[in-house]
Amino acid sequence: MKILMSWFVVIGLWLVSASAMTFVHPGALNSRAELDFIKGQISAGAQPWKGELEQIKNSRYAHMGPHGLTNIDSKSEDANISRYDAAAAYSQALLWYLTGEEAYARSAIAILNSWSNLQAFTTGTQQDRLQAGWIGAVFAPAAEIMRLYPGWTPAEIMNLQAMFRRAFYPQLTTASSWNGNVDLTQIDALMAIAVFNEDEHLFHQGIARLKLRNPAYFYLSSDGPRPQPIEGDGGDVEKFWHQPLKWVDGLMQETCRDNGHHAQYGLGSALHAAETAWHQGIDLYTENQARYTAAMELLAEQFLSDSMQGVARDPRPSPNRFDTWSVGYNHYHNRAGVDLPHTRRLLSEQVRPRAPRAIWNLNYETLTHTGLPSGAAPPQAPK
Image 1 (cartoon, rainbow, N blue to C red):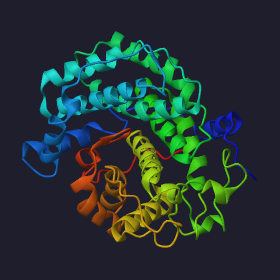
Image 2: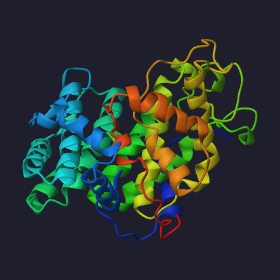
Image 3: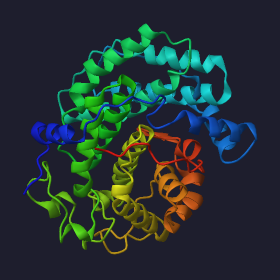
């Protein structure tokens, strides 16, 4: 039976999974304990953390000021203006916490406050949903870090929360029917914003959406001969998955679209959502371990071998590498003890030497999620 991304399904799953919760701050992509660990490593001059921090200091984002808009036309230069401000806010939030330099805090808050007057995304297409996902998934973690700065007033925080409800909720609470990376990016933003807004309903809606999307994006042979259908696939799973030559564990819905380029966005966004849930005491990683680790290892093997391993008509993988493997590797290897040899090699040989450190919602994972202490399991399981 076809899975429908409808309000009825999402609300039904939310009602099953919802439970009273107290939000932990900061608790989107970063926790305070993890930020403190990174700060200690930098103070000790340890690598790669010290070198990664220097890269942010020397980036354009470390020196940017605010460019807040009243409306965003996602098909215009507004897309880049909002993209760069989101990256700057997150960059400067990290720089403030990790260096203690007040100037970074004041600048990060000025950027966030400048976006409090945003009213809406105005293009009227699914591009708005993608843009809201891309930038919401970066603005919200920046705001979560800046909650720790005493100079950001409660009124200013409330203004940003109201902006998220007004401008971002309408774009994020309806799933995109484009390729699955868009929905997963929306989910990343939805859950990060829910933490900042302390919105339990929205948080569980994100979890419900992720549960629907996972089997329709990350294939396992245990699902059957073909992956789960989902709204937006046009009733043709083969076409929606871009005509793979064979179905193997770890194949992603966009693996064969452009040989791993967009698949990294989908994978990174799903792992971000799981990491946000982890910081709020909910373990989504374990139930998805086979799915996510198979996807990581297959794509890493394809990149390392410069071969699509016979799954795609174009035999060569994308040349693009993004800084979005460390979140998954940190959890499954460092916390859970899973051996991920291809992912480990990819991080060492390709991602850290050449991946851009900030692109859309994939930012600075080498800095924020390398070698973190294993820590304890979340205190509560999802209901």
